Image 1 (cartoon, helix red, strand yellow):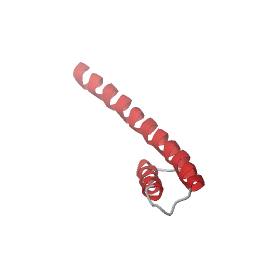
Image 2 (cartoon, rainbow, N blue to C red; image 1 turned 30 degrees about the vertical axis):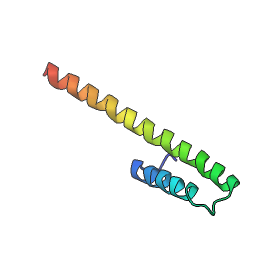
Image 3 (tube, one colour; image 1 turned 45 degrees about the horizontal axis):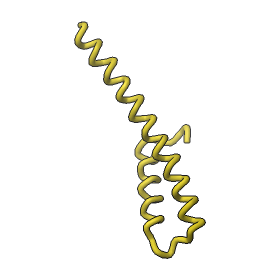
Length: 65
């Protein structure tokens, strides 16, 4: 996932959720998709946390300028 963008990960997460919701999806496939979705969600969360930290730093620098 190192080369994946936030948008790609979010799209993969949405696709996994959509597939899980289909009645034709087997339990095994649903579990695999759930695991994949959790990885995508963690990846997105890390990116958002990093962005939040950068924004906080920029705000503090702006206050001190």
